[in-house]
Image (cartoon, rainbow, N blue to C red; front, side):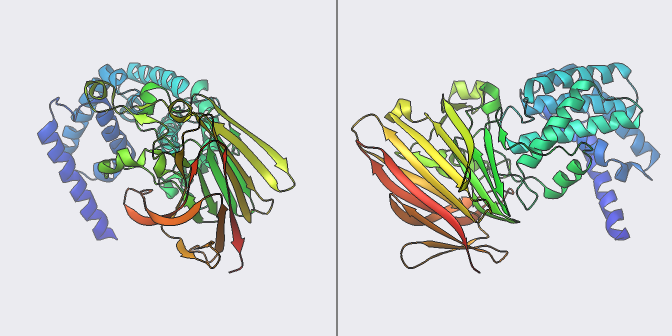
Length: 455
């Protein structure tokens, strides 16, 4: 253990020294605001490992470089890409003054910019404006770092930051499955379960999640060991949609620590080649019409070069409500994302039984024109779940924890097809249940049910 620690410290020291030697002077992209912010945050949070017992000359070079980078960050933090990178840059600017204790002015500037970005990006229900659970996690992590830094120097965090913190913690709990990680909704990955637990352990308020995150556009059904999260929101605006997904109506289902129905996730830095496919509607557990995504990514060209791969169009009107019935809690939602293209509106109803042993659903496609269109209702299954067919057309899902769930459907042809899962930055092969059908003059109705069966 001691040998590994010594080896790790030596490796980190060499890497930091090499970086200072190569990039000590300003250059792009190493000194871009958001790149610098990520680097500085890592050093401020974990630098004690290498700073302690280090050579005085090396330590002096490190702090000279840190102060120079912080001065540059003060000048350019507002130029970071809009969205989460700009919020992180402001947070690290404030954190830098707290950690180095060398500039009250930089602290004030950083806190002022952070308050401004928090008010712009954190919604009234505590979600992030991008609607990504993982973006919310990163914003919350930076907010916690700054607030703890202020507490350590005996300063009270500003009201704007405290208020945002108390809203964001319940929203993080809103998005957590039983395994402690986040749902794969709107471009977010699972995140690190240990980091999430550690951050939430610092929350003294212990605020519990809402059932309906109205501003973020999500519904949450929970009963017994089961949890169902449903995307009922619109496409995020402008620059906040650079990583957004066309998954309106999609849901995820878990039982205890085991995920059952998922979305495919996002490529991230490690798997960028998958990004375009994973942002399409077909990569989500919802309805796809005519093999067409419900929102489109800005096409390649000058516009994308200038604005980035923004998500365009998508639903203009999204309706959702929840009600309690004898069968359990029910969410009714609808969206018009396919109205402009095909004059088709999608309605979805999802009900979770009081004991959490059954999730029933109904999808309804309403067409105002006589032209026929194919549709596919997709349920992507987590790769740890074993899928097998039963007599009579049903599907058996065997969970890692030993539970068995049966899936049945009507209103179309049920098939088992290949799929992928990128929840944790690696590509895993999995399967999806697909109900194929077509809609013509009359509405198409598809009914389906997941129910727990005896092991």
